Image (tube, rainbow, N blue to C red):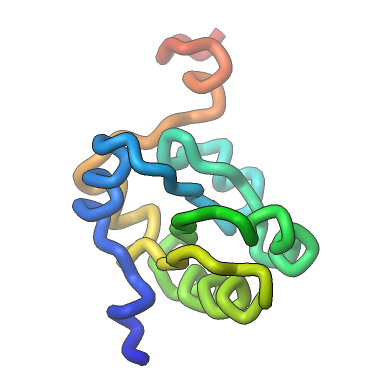
Length: 120
């Protein structure tokens, strides 16, 4: 299987999100990186914690893994796919959070908590 079969582009992911289809976005970056900015609606499961959290993800219809540049998230796809309880479609965000942020807004921890751009 080629890496492309394991990836989804930012445009494709945005289309899924806008259509309202169920998709779990699993950001495997560190909590500090996640707090600086993330894809709206994503959840933070740092890469090293993925094996412990994998059962929680198993029932999802669609999972998209996210890392800085799209390399580690390909490894995360393989880990999730190897779990026998995984039945859904698992893909890595092509180009990672960097590619997403070129065309789409990131959500910061402050904005998510307050609902505004205000830092306080």
